[in-house]
Image 1 (cartoon, rainbow, N blue to C red):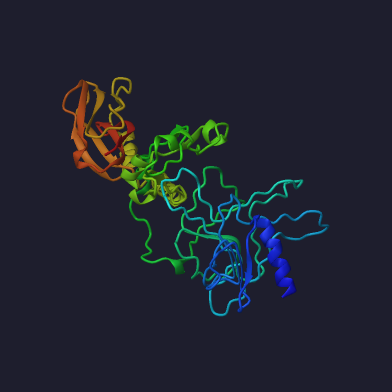
Image 2 (cartoon, rainbow, N blue to C red):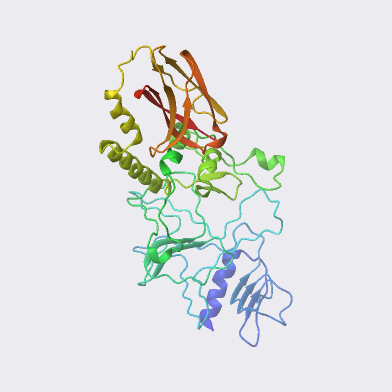
Length: 399
């Protein structure tokens, strides 16, 4: 009883409860600063009768509910030490909850906030978590309303259940994405042409705009003191960046574009890497096909040695305009008067002939290509005069 009484006095002095009565009921419960002592709920309560299931309950309008100042101690120690050993239930060493009665408040609400300063050589940590078991995480975070129900088969410094958003850089020696086949279903090789799609991607350079944190229902007064997303001198704003426009990429690979909680579109750049590898494989196959003489274009070119020798200066193939195109494009060419037969061939990047146009006129003429019957992608077109390939060029169709 003596120790309990001394502890009670110390806590009372921390809260500055002036002229408050102190009562100990028959069950040993202690209360300070309340007029109703007939029905105490907590073992110790200040300015109230306490709360059922709460050992120590403090009700105060002061800016700080509880302050413990530990000074002059040599060696390690802590201001508050909590041991919690419940039987059969979830256990929290420290549980912090900050709940405002009005959601329109312009001020932040933190369940747990930590501020560190004064140590040398970077040994300042606002919040630290340590793992003292084989499995688990030093720091755990979830976007779910429930904290429990997660079993980890490993030891992690941090584990986050839900999306993680950062306005700065993520620095890591290695970035791993779970890719074990046991975690996947409906697995099949990418059979469609990635090369055409990759070539249709519009690579841009850009700089980020400054953004402000926005809240639903913000007042004009709140907007005036909004925090900025980025430091004005940060590399995020100052440096030039390279990438894709999400809306454009969405037309080619919609699964690689995701709409965030804020309504803005994001790009999954990691999964573009396998598509690039697939494109390189397709391009390599085309090179091998050409070198082995099995490409339709090379077959036409090989027959040109047996054809009539024409004036290469007169017979000319020009780049199509516009390029890229969406609806139609015009291919201009010059054909010598001596040419008996002239044709314009359209090929896919796989070397498959998909169209043939007869060039009937001589001199400067043109052929209009309608893109409505073609899929978006890159194509080859070649002018062949009397069996001789005059030239081959590329054109890009976008939709």
